[in-house]
Amino acid sequence: MPFHENNGIRYYSFDLFPNAIVQAVFTRRGGVSPQPWHSLNVGGSVGDEPLHVAENRVRSFQIMGREPASIHDVWLVHSTDVVYAEAPRQLDKPSTKADILLTNRPDVTLFMRFGDCVPILFYDPKKQVVGISHAGWLGTARGVASTAVRAMQERYSCKPKDIQVGIGPSIGVDHYEVGADVTAQFKEVFGADSERIIETRNGRTYLDLWTANAIQLKNAGVEQIEVSEVCTACHLEDWFSHRAEKGKTGRFGALIALQA
Image (cartoon, rainbow, N blue to C red; front, side, top):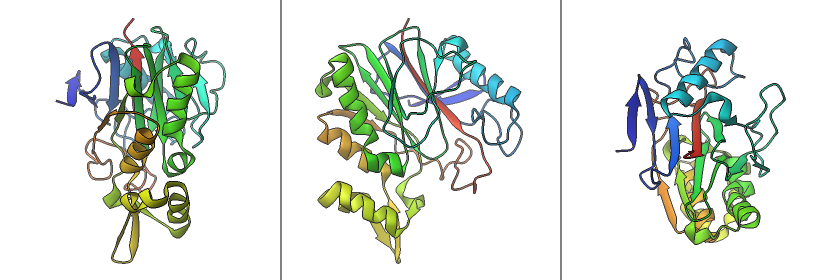
């Protein structure tokens, strides 16, 4: 089963990944934050008290058996920039701006925050490399998923056919209406494949980020892909959704790490 619960914290994990790694996409349940960030908010820029955010992050790490100090996170900017985490991040220094995190260090826990965008988790069992990326519409159009695969090849000599990838809970196509500018970019980037990504209903256009990222991964040579097909906007009892909650909400966390 993909959902698990521990000490009131509910999280999603991918069946594809083996027990050789620690991986979770946390729901909003089990934290200390009040409304509208109720309750496991780990977003530090949405108006919640910093002490609440810190406590929620610590709880998330502890239930997964990871030291909170092992965190390496980034400041998300919808880019294709990569950070190779050689050690935990020094928390007294600013985060690097990037949307892809990779490591082969068991003492490092990769962590990102989401509020509708797609968490994509990566694992190469042969090279013992893990990664996580943040794919909103702009990051997807820029090729964040394929860039992560290429970075794993170049830095760690990974082979795409060995890489396992989980596409996590995020906004689904039924709730993700986009404008003509976004539609035009996806048609340019994906060509004929855009017909599988863009849906038009009753004069409105909707974007399928799950399929778009799966197409990128397959084109990059990845064969092992699991898509959660869990929509954040459909299940507000479990997830923060920036769009469904009109911006007045928190951010849910996702982490991945090699077993120490």
